[in-house]
Image (cartoon, rainbow, N blue to C red):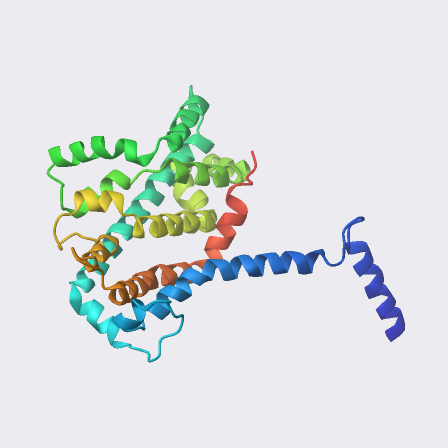
Length: 293
C-alpha cells in the first residue's frame, strides 16, 4: 500500500511540472526573491544600526556596520529634540483623514462608473483616469492658491481636503465592483431597494478587500508624502512627522544618529497599520484588477 501511494505521489509530481520546465526553477526563483529581499532590507538595517550609534561612530571613516555599544538614549534624545509626539499625531490625523476620505469618494465614484448607465460614462471615466499622467508638482501651485483663498493654510482641512480624491482609487474600486454579480443588485432592486441601499448593503460589504487595499495604499503614501505638507504647514500645530524630520538637519550639520532614531519611530505606525490589515491588503491586490463584466 505504501509503495502504491509513493508511486501515485511521484506520478502527480511529474504531471504538475510543465513540459520544458526545469525542476530547479523554483529554487532559482526563490534565490532571486531572497536576494531582492536582502537588498531591500539593507537600508532599513543600516538605519536601525545608525540609530544606535554614537556621533563619533556615525562620522567614522571608514564607516562601520555595528555600533560598539548600543546607545538606546538616542531615541529619548530624538523624542525630546522636537515636539515629536505632536508630529506623530498630526501625521495620524492627516494620513488617516486622507485615507478615509479617499475611500469614501472613490467608492461613490467607482459605483457610478461601474454600475450606472448614463451618456458619456466611459469617456468621462477615461478622461478622469487620464489625470494620473499629470505630475502632482504641476497642480501644487493652483491647489495652494485655492487653499490660501479659503484660509486653510496651516490647518488640517488644508492638508486633507485637496488630497481627498484619487483617480487611482476610482480605477481600483471600479474594477472590483465590476466583478460583483449584477444579479445580486437586480434581485435587491426587484425587492424595492434603492440605489443607495444596494450600494450600502450589497456592494460595500462585498468589497472589503479592495477598500482595505485602497486605504492602506493611501495611508502609506500620504504618511510619507513631503511636498504638500511642506508647503501648507508652517507651525508645529499641523506639521506631520515627515516634515518634522527636517528639524534634525541644522545649518552647520546633521545629527544623523538622532535623525535615524526618529525615522525608526516614524515607520512604526505604518508597519502596525500594514500588519493589522495584511490579510485584506493581500486579497485586495489579488482580486481588484481582475474583475469581470
